[in-house]
Image 1: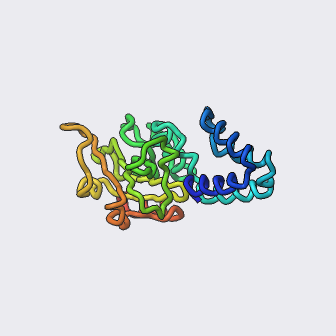
Image 2: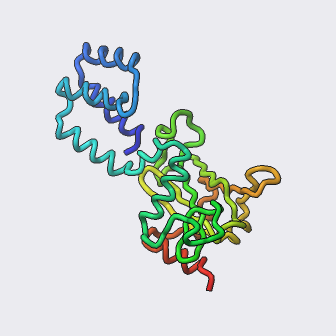
Length: 236
């Protein structure tokens, strides 16, 4: 269930209101001011519960169904820097205790060139969220399910392949997280890599609804992530 389906369901419930209550709800929604986590969906459901159109048990069932199918939606509410850097790195570290925050204790020459260290392998971690590229609004309103047919674009930026052994790209949809592992060589030779700034040392790789199939060879199951990285990137 996505936001559109949720809204359709709530509107069907609202159709059961008395005429006076329908007009009252419409009037209040027109002047409603929202502030997270209080929004029009929350308001409509409370209004419907107050008027006896929906029971608390029915509300709980609806809530559970929506949460189960949108388990990563909250990540769309994070600020870009917090999501791309802080959440991405912490998420990877939480997956396996072998992942460590990069630092001079592991690499005396370290000066911020990469993000994560694992048994001598130097990794950059990049995370992006799948959003509807032809829809206006907040990130949350543009969030997509993995099986969506809508156009999306993930731009993995600030790549420095000359300063790390490889990359972990994290793709987030509302219901699924996908991991791609590329060596620095694979990234540099990708037909989708381009300079982020003219003449600069940073690059970017875009994953879209049109080319995502080409990245399937780099996709790794989360349970195999650390072992795959070590197999592909650890120097013998």
